[in-house]
Each structure stands twice: as C-alpha cells, then as structure tokens.
Length: 276
Image (cartoon, rainbow, N blue to C red; front, side, top):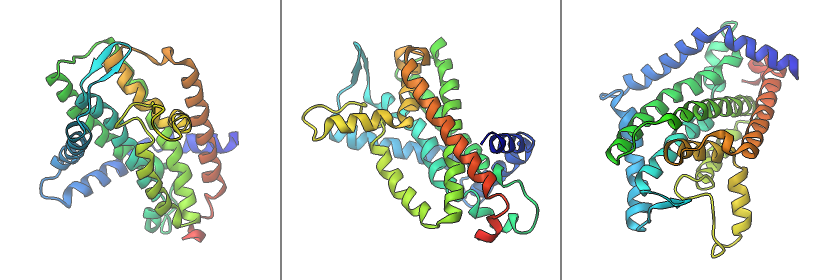
C-alpha cells in the first residue's frame, strides 16, 4: 500500500510541468472548437445557476436561508454551493475517461499513466476559478465583501482537489476494466447533486418520507463537507476547526480513497495496454 502511494506521489510531483501542459492543452482545445472561446467558461455556469434560481428560488418562492440567526438571500447562498459542485461534478464524470481517452498516447510511448487523473482535475480547477469569479462578483452586488474567514476557501479548495484526485484515480482504472463504469457514474452523479446541499440545506424535516435516512446520507457525502465549508467561510464566519468530527471523517475517507486509487494505478500500471 505505502509502496503504491510513494510511487504515484513521486510520479505526479516529478511530472508537474507535464500535468500543467496537458491540462492547458485540453483547455485550449475546448476553446478552439468554439467561436467565443473562454466566454463559455463563464457563460455556462452562469446559465446553470440562473436556471436553478428561477426554478427553486423564484418559481418555488424559496425564502432566504437562516442558520443560527444569520439570514442569507437564496441566490448568493445557491451560487457558492454550486461553485463547489461545478468543480466536483466534471471531475467525477471526466475522471472516468482520464486514462481511456489517452490510449493513443500510452500505446505509442512510455508514459506516466498515473498523472492523467491529475490533468483532468487541474483542467476543471481552472473552470472552478472562473465560476468563483462569477460568485465573488455576485457576492459584491449583494453586499458581501472579503474578510479573514474567506481564506478558508483556499483550504476547502484544497480539500476538493485531493478528494477529486482520489476519486478520479479510482474511476479511471475501473473504467479501463469495465467500460460500463462511466455510464453508471454519469447516472449516479445526476442523483448525487440532489443528495448534496446545493439547492437546499442538509436537513430534511419530518414531513419528508425517510427524512432520517436522507439526512444521514447527505451528511456522509464528503461533498457535503466541501459545500458547507465554502458557505461557512463566506457567510457564517466559521473555519474547519469548528467542525472537528466532520473534518476527521472527511480526511479519513479521502485518504482511504487516495490509497485505494494509488493501489489500483500501481497494480495495473503495466496492464493498461492489454486492457484497451
């Protein structure tokens, strides 16, 4: 286990520039295929948030979110949560194809396969930064300005990066073993969005069937820790030290997933060509 972790970590750190170059190339390739280029990196998330706000905020007449006496308008509350999800969702779905999409490269040359999941995460992190810029502008409009607690966004961005890297490593190998994994994950990811506190709080009342089970599922979801952390940093003036139990749970689960991902990459590193 430790041998596989050391192998993957060493290979990733020794190929940092290669990871950056591949992620940059993928981004430029996406922009080259469209006339407006980088405009869509800002327009797509804006349209998504606007749609959810119209449906869940306006059509359903959603009231401001109140937590411990602090009232937050629904739109800024929504966009901060969605900013975290905008990073997680494509990392999960595109992470499945991290290795499979580069089979033409790994079959023609000796290539450090373990860096490929990191290239997907780095590419999506750029899109996440675009989304955060939109969120910050909206926060300014609503009268929310940076303070010391906003530094917590750096910590939670790091948390999401490590979690998504771990999940991408696992899914990229599993997709090489079973092609159906990507279709399954794509379907589950759609459901996962509604089991994350993006559109509503992580709390179901007794009027909701199986509310106790649903509350446990949402709290066990590691993405819940990230989304809640983003909002704690921006709106509620809290740090990860205010949630020691959930912090330990998150990092325990994340490190376990990271170890599993490293073990899978190490075990199949010489067999990927045979799996194509």
